[in-house]
Length: 217
Image (cartoon, rainbow, N blue to C red; front, side, top):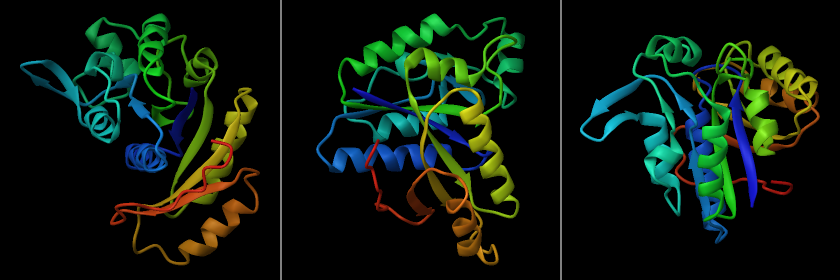
């Protein structure tokens, strides 16, 4: 089972959109692919408990679809930084719980997509960073770049931080979140020539089935 950790250049870069597209691309190849959002803030109360929109989207894109509790073991209600939401709820993120949930998901699929929170350096707790989760689950990293003004700097800084943390960046996804951005192709090309990782796809919000280059993933 191969696992990918999807991080982004920032909140709003389109990690969930890209993660779902990646799951569907693998499924189109006949693979069993399941998604996971270990930590999520901005959840709503339902009769079944707290539910997060991103986690539900990952479940809808998964086959097999894991139990919600495994997909999103740490859901918090306020739409704030997860480590702050966890402190307010007095329910800190626990790495062993995430490891166990991922193991149950991985037992039933050939590809897993684990979506992070915010950007790469958004903390999960006072002592836990997303790099710790990547190392614990032995995941490779895909960076989603929200293509908007400033994305070159954000992409290259994120790639540098991922490598500095000893994690393997296996590719990046250009996500065109600003349809009015001037010279977007030039920015994508500038990132591609400097990031030292292959571009897996260039996404637009209206695309139902974007093309992926999945070699190495």
